[in-house]
Every structure is written in structure tokens, then in C-alpha cells.
Image (cartoon, rainbow, N blue to C red; front, side):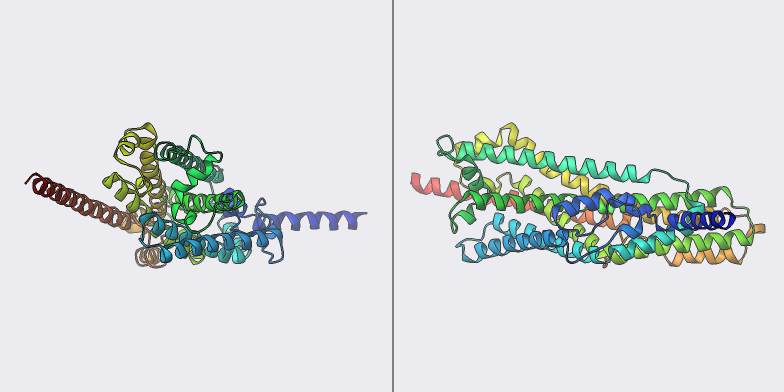
Length: 439
């Protein structure tokens, strides 16, 4: 009986000692975001609801993988249709180019996420081991709640933006199309405002409309919430560096052994960031560039006032639309909300670099009597091996964000000057025509 009890207790102790290693806090922080990507059909990984590293697995022969394959096929098909419409059309419109770029972006997102999904179970296992080594320094609790708040707020803002856009297009269809009130299928008239170039080469059918809306919704949601993975990851990493900084700040007058241990902990945090950069650098770079493109395009439309959506409206209809509440709401939300989402994600990512550099300030306060070789090594490690989230070609810091914002402002100033010059040119041409007719 005593042998059986001893064996039972040993098994329980060994099980308890293994469980903390398998649990991954990073997976808990990204769980809801990754489940949303899986629901959209772009992250075929099983076991995402669990925080245990052993439950997460990628299977090629599974429902999620088949769903992912069909989702990618839908994005590629829409991309091909848009490119086809651009080539066979007599005039290359702005709307066609934007649709091509949007489906190209979502296709690339889908491929990158699928590649990440294949290695995700290995990544979670590596990070769970690092988290176990950092268990003694971990003080912050419930970081996943903050990550979930960022996800829900971002998703809600995206839904509001798309609903207002649908309201605006309904207004355009009602004002600019005489057949809207008498049409049996009003969705056809709205679809004509959204993608007029497609209906010129393919007859309308309800099943086509349903498939297009599903693929378009997948593309819209993925493009809108792709930065939440950067937000959640940044919040997770910032919390670790803040816990580490609190220890350094309160224990500056410690021995050489203490600083050697802190150097080891900082190296573990550096490895944590390197693992995530190795998996997400392409996604970060591409999302950075895509958001930059769409912000510039939307600001271009705001400056020019006349969107490509209104090209089939006459002057009276344009005035009715442009002074409507729907128009003001649409251009306000479609301009401000993407800019806010981009800035929040970029600033959070830049804060990882700021928190990683803060130990330098505390090392400068160490008295000369306590300054030793380990502190000097630690100082050089932070100084010459800076930690930050990267997008392959660049590191996300506040200096990088400042440069991007300055480029956007420069672009908008140039567009304002060109817009003013073109309007003056049009006014001169009209004046010359009027004078010629009068003579």
C-alpha cells in the first residue's frame, strides 16, 4: 500500500512540474485573434482554444485545412477577375486598381498566415519553455484581457466602418440610379455601384452575388484586423519588459551574481522577441505597407472630394450626395478609423523597443562602488543589441513612425498643390471656351 501511494504521489508531482512548461501565456494573449483568423479560413490550426502547447497542432488533412484552401482559392479567383477586368477594359479606373490591390494584399496575407500556421505548434512550444525560465520574474497578471479588448475594439470599429460604407453605397444607388425604386432586386443596383466593371463582362446572378459577398467580407475583415496580432503581441512583450524593469529599478545596489542573473533573463527576453520576429516579420512588413497605401488612397479621395464611386452621377446628384449625412459619415469613418488602427498598432510595437532600452537608464544610476564587469557587459548588450519588433527591412521604433507620418504629410501637401493647380487649369479652360462661344 505504501509503495502504491509513493508511486501515485511521484506521478502527481511529475505531472504538476510538467504542466507549467506546457502552458503558454503568449498563446492565451493571441488566442481570440487566431480563432478569428481561423473562422475567416486563413489559420488552419487545431487546439487554439487551449493554452497548453501540446494541444496545438497543424494537420494537412483536416476541416480547417480544406476550408483554408477554399478561402485562398476564393481570394485568388477574385484577384484574377479584377486583373482580367483591368486588362480588357478600355479605361483603367481607380476602383479597379484598388480592388486588385485589396485582393492581392489579402491573398498574400492568407499565404503568410498559412505558413505561420504550419510552424505554430513549434513556436508555442519554444516560447512556453522560455516563459517557464522567466517564471520567477513574472508579476503582471491577466495580460490576455488587455489583448482581447484591443481585438474587440478593432473588430467593432471595422464593423461600424463597413456598415456606414454600405449605407453610403445604398444612398448612391438610390440617388444616382433611376431604376433603384422600381427594381425587384435592389442588391443588384448596389452591386453595380460597388463593382460596375464586373457586371459589364459577367451577367448578374444571385449565387454569384452571395459568393462575392462572402469572399469580400473575408478580405475586408482580414485587412482590417490583421494588425491586432501586432497589438496583442506588443502588449504581451511590453508586460514582460516592464516586470523586468521593475526588478532592475528597485535592486540597483546588488552584487555581481544578481547582475549576471539579470543578464540571463534579458537574453531570454531577447530570444522571445527573436522567435516572434522570425515568424511574423513578413506579416508585419506587409501589413505596414498595405495600411500605408490605403491611408494615402483614402486621403487622396478626401482631398479630391469626387470619389470614383460617384463617376456615374450628374451634377445635381453629386450635390445631393456630397451634402448628405451618409457622405460625411462614410468619409469620416473610412479615413479616421484606419489611421487610428494603424497608429495604435505602430505605437504599441514601438513601445517594445522603448521598454527594452529602459534598463540603460537604471544602469546609469548604479553607484561607482557597485559597478562591475557584469554590469558593463549588460550595458554593452543593451546598447549594441537593440530589441524591437521588425518587418524584415526595418525595425519598428518611434523614429520609424515619425518618418512614415512625415512622408504621408508630404504626399498630402503635394496632392493639395496638384489639386489646386488642376482646378485652376479647368477654370481657365472653361473661361476660354465661354469667351470663344460669346465671340
